[in-house]
Amino acid sequence: MFQAKVSICIPTYKQPAFLKRLLDSIVIQTHKNIEVIVSDDTPNTSVNEVVNDFKDLLDIYYHHHNPALKTPINWNFALDQANGEFIMLIHQDDWLAQNNSIEKYLSKFSENPNADFVFSKNTPINPDGSIVNINTKYNTIKHLNDQYHSLIYSYVIGPPSNIMVRRTVTTRYDTRLIWLVDVDYCVRSIKAGYRVDYIDEPLLNIGMHQEQATVFCYENPHIILRENILYANKLSKEHFKKIKLYDYFWRLLRNHKVRSVEDIILTGVDAKEINSTIKHMISLEKKIPLNWLMNGFISKTFMFLNYIIFRLCY
Image (cartoon, rainbow, N blue to C red; front, side, top):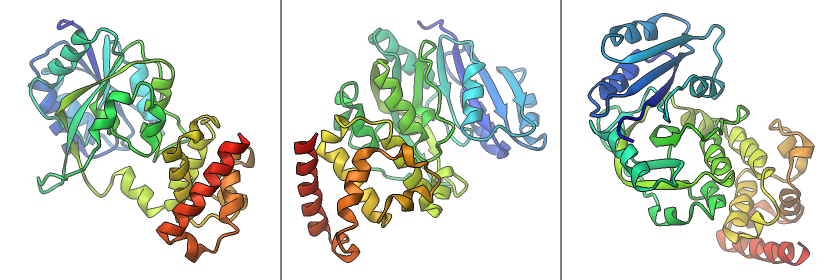
């Protein structure tokens, strides 16, 4: 296990200083059998110049794309180049938190030979070096293999960077998604039968900054609505029998003031991609004045009544 090759795949776009920080954290790893794959969408040579500085320090491979592949196609390309027994997809703005982070991931696989997919805690860090405190409900982790549907409303796994998988995990990222791309990847992986395990220690630092996709999506809320509807279309009625999941989508429609199927179609979703359960929710919500729905108690009451009707009908 401890001689296993690990492929670290790094999709890049500009920001050469971030890439250098990540590569520096790889150079000092106690586990040395690492190949690094840089898949670059940058229109200039800035990233390639950084890669060249590390050619004597790392087993590193560089791929340049013109035109750019863009996220997450670039992620999938990088994964497809990996030759290691174990694979990590680390974003260039993140970096390994300890000099034995890779060794600790491999140790978890050694402890649990049934694990296909291991993730750790992470530490979000602002540009000024301050730590972002995130209240993650890690007590839900032990149920992930059986209750993966909960990830949509309680995403405890974190970004792709703090996940290591066996080469046998063939899941790839849905190229239609940005906001839910990581949630969708993890749910489909677990649903496919890949077993998850967890390291209760922060092994990765997450670089927070204003150019992240998260910021872009918050500024374009129609993306969040569209991707959640696309995700809902992958769920069965059986999943929606979980009241927390039902409530999550009820609040999504309410918060985005959806009053008709047409409101969703305007975000770029085809009518046939709108789940029948979502349509069921809209049929009631549109009858309720928005100012009532925005009242938490009233909204929760109507949600519960609608949920009971849904359970009785299906």
